[in-house]
Length: 156
Image (cartoon, rainbow, N blue to C red; front, side, top):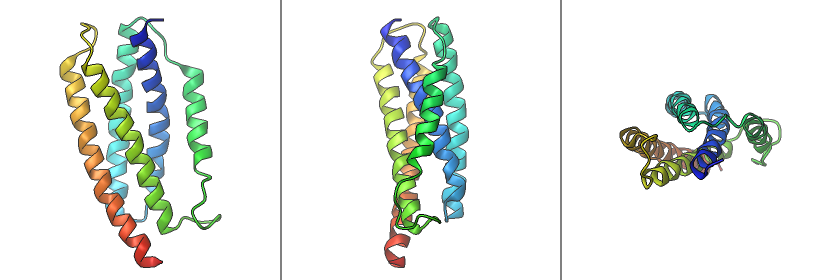
């Protein structure tokens, strides 16, 4: 398998985990944060479709097993300590938003790495659009993270 196909398959696996991660957004306390994470999750589905198309153009296949493992790993990651084993706390929102921020930051780094590539199978305009979308997602998540942190510290 060529290096590009392998790299894209890695990010396709990450997309599967990211979609699972952003599914947690429905549990956030703040309705605006819930709406933002729902919008980002929908964008992740679109990004995954773009990655699937690229994998196909590269003549490769989807990494089905690693995607399943990534989804399971994300769910196991939900077992992190948040100060209460039975319910969400204000701290849970802070940690979840940090995880989402980190996932989107990794995705943006992937788009930026692909922008360094000169390959006719990869549409530069699409990559720039995806990178810019990811940067907006990061900004939105940062705002919600700060608000969640203020709520958590005030509740303490």
